[in-house]
Amino acid sequence: MNFKEDLELNKLNHSCAHLLAQAVKRLYPQSKFWVGPVIESGFYYDMDLQDVVIKEADLANIEAMMKKISKEAKYIIRQELSKAQALEIFAGDEYKLDLIENLPESEIISVYRQGEFIDLCRGPHVASTKEIKYFKLLKVSGAYYKGDSHNKVLQRIYGVCFFSEEELNQYLQLLEEAKRRDHRKLGKELDLFMNHELVGSGLPIFLPNGALIRRKLERYILDKETALGYQHVYSPSLATVELYKTSGHWDHYHENMFPVMKMEGEDLVLRPMNCPHHMLVYKNALRSYKELPLRIGELAHDFRYEASGAVSGIERVRQMCQNDAHIFVTPEQIKEEFGRVVNLILDVYQDFHFTDYTFRLSLRDKANKAKYFDDDEMWEKAENELRTVLKDLQLNFYEAPGEAAFYGPKLDVEVKTAIGHEITLSTCQLDFLLPQRFDLTFVDADGSKKRPVVLHRAILGSIERFMAFLIEQYAGAFPLWLAPLQIEIIPVHATKHLKYAQNIQKRLDKLGLTTYLNASEEKFNYRLRQSQLKKVPFTLIIGDQEILSKEVNLRSFGTSDSTNIKFVDFLKLVKKRLEDHL
Image (cartoon, rainbow, N blue to C red; front, side, top):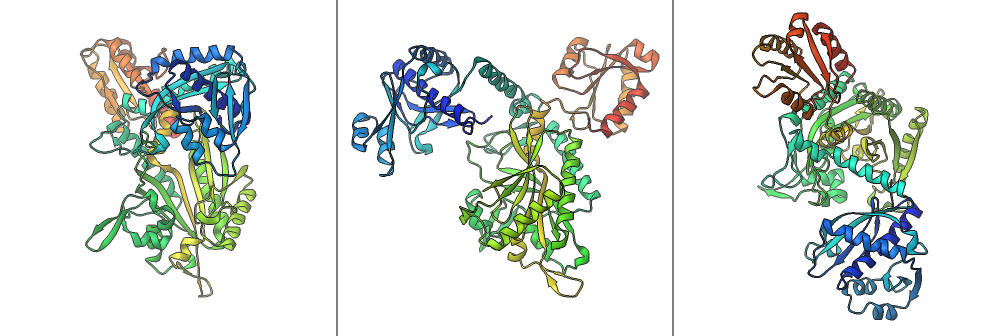
């Protein structure tokens, strides 16, 4: 749900932001207000309450005042003003005066009045406060005036508003589910990763459990790619600025890179992407048409300077490991190789049981060409090539002008998360530019030199971001094949049943499974409860009956029921689950 894109919901939430400001003004008459826009997840209002600090507990009182004003059914009236009139009305309010002074001379200045409250706004708004009934204030935080860290910190109150109580309740339930699945919360509870201020913002450390999952993901995708003819390389995380000037990334991307390091006459920088290095891998040898397609892959560490306010757990980080590859093809091979990439994406999504995703063809914005490589002929050719391939593959897709990379159009695969968000996981980009900038060639069948085309593709994308997605998708309860701890064995009596439990563990360990034998002195029920809290896929309980019958008592995570099963049959079940990625 995007509150900004839904015009009616946008108008309602914009009106609710004014209702919030009016309520705050009644409760705290000294208040002054900056801006209160609608955002994708509702609205917020930035305000200066002088010496008063709003806390979460105060939001209920503000909501009560908002409901009171709503019941007063104040008409919301639009009025257009001259600049002089606007300056007079808001005299003494430095925030509104700043807005007015910086408006273009040609802009119509409008205000909206509801009862005693008046606010500068373009609108539109609903007709009366009585239409604003179903809202909730969600949280309060600090925000720099104008987003500048040198300015005063204002207080920002977030909220949402809907047309019915049912819609509001559904949304609040979704927010609660999002909290339950939050990868940062689960990452801490399950000991997957940590952050520390001594290391730095956006630089997580993977703990043993998280490292196990990460290794499984890395091995999985490397094995997939190797079977498809990819050749993997290692390239350095540092390069000279000249490399990125040659590729063109310096002009288009240097603001997102870490600062230049000057060392012994060289200007070095941490790399934000891998394609320039892979261009040089291709250029390292004389290439023949017989070698193409040449698929160069790497699990590469990249560095991007995300603002401290944007970093989040392992979803938005400053160092990431990219599942990256660059495929060098002849122009005639584009269709077939692009189809292979799409089939690899679909195969991976089947293994992870992703079913809710869409294909987006990201194109150049023809009305704003400044941020793209300047070659109209190249863009027309590249966009038409991808469009044709997608149609030939009979994929349902939609086009998104303005979302292309600076060097070419791309296919993005948007996957819907368990809480309804859409994120881009996989991409495949068509590039005629970098082969030109690096003067890449191959010797064709007739002996002439030709220029290859490059497909940039990422299947898992950033391993960190993919893991964050999986944590939230599975709510921390990973399937057997990915779980850091796959099977926990609990003897009912730590001594009496220990030997049989140890034999079970040895046989499971030989299969490469990660197991834990919990023979501590804690009570049985406590040990069983701890296994559930760790979200272990399978818990095996060993007692007298199990030893006598050569069985295990099996309990799957998330269930309170258990069943006895022959150990040999349990091994078959485990093998099947692993094969099916369950």
